[in-house]
Amino acid sequence: METNKKELIRSIYLYLFSLVGLVLVTIGLVRLVDLGLKVYIFKGADEVYLYPEYPARPVKGLSAEETQELTAEEKEKFKQEQIEYQTKSQASHRQSTAAESLAMIIVGLPLFLYHWRVIQKDKHGK
Image 1 (cartoon, rainbow, N blue to C red):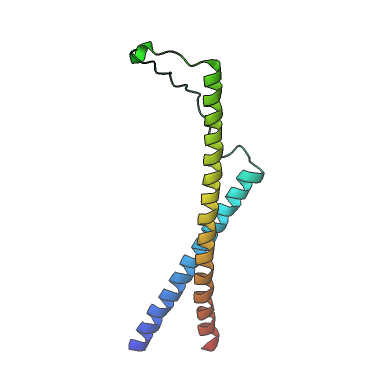
Image 2: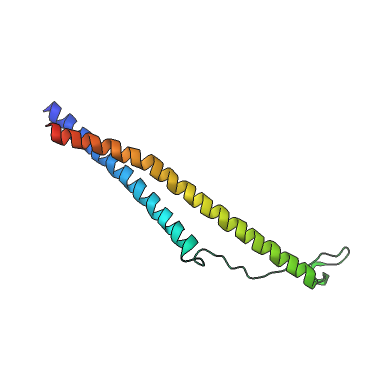
């Protein structure tokens, strides 16, 4: 009776950790495929569009309502800074997603393979 209970607990443990490993690998692969599709096929899928809001140039001695508008050059510079920020942010997000996805696969694959092999050995050994 005690042996059957231990075997049941062991089987539950092995199947549970095999499932966890398989889920990690699946999520990691789905995220990598998603990233690949966004980078190579649906290039506009993760772009962020910002409404161009130009900060007012502060002038010493004037209140917030009395500040001067930016010149065309200053507006263009601000727009370029926004585009550069968006590009860097997008690249950083993609790298972060790729790193997280690969980490899931690197952790999940051995977890799944080890526990699944133990299950298969138990099945064929009995």
